[in-house]
Image (cartoon, rainbow, N blue to C red):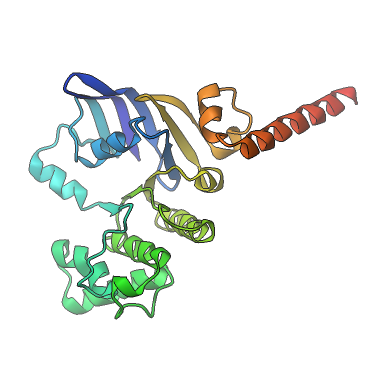
Length: 264
């Protein structure tokens, strides 16, 4: 579990994050959503230590990341897995070598143990036969799956994903969503995903934080969005006319069912 308490972040006197408090639960896919410039990327960078909060606390299972020494933060980061928007694989390394990279850097495993662990991770993302290939030989979706395999190689407690579906077609995006969701459940980790993908929001949004102009505007689950009365949230979620029509139908049908029930 990751808990944020009264988190604020300013740059040159401009407040970007404004007194955010929330909890990201373990064993769930926690999504951060919001318009470009809303502060969600800054929020994630504060969580992983790329930025230092101006004020407030970030607690990893009760451990205050903000007040830790440099050595303590480095140790905690070994419990984190990262999936970047571009996959960020090393082109000169094979798929297997890419997945082994964190193990080579931070584990005390023997070479054979590192190879076995990397192969296990590739099997987990359904890429068991791709270890000898290079990233350039893979599709975008396969590269993202390699990035997931690398991120879970050290068996992290916390998994951070920055726009994992960026550049992918809708079908492949669903594969990535389902994979992240199942890994979160299987490993009982705290997964936090920055996303603009509304399919992800509706499909795997077990805990959704909506950031608006630097503050937490709304928090809930995907099933609550359709009936939300928060106009800033609905304007963001239902930006297209098609989605607005879908929501109108859901609301009208819901009201109709309520009326019928009352009539009985």
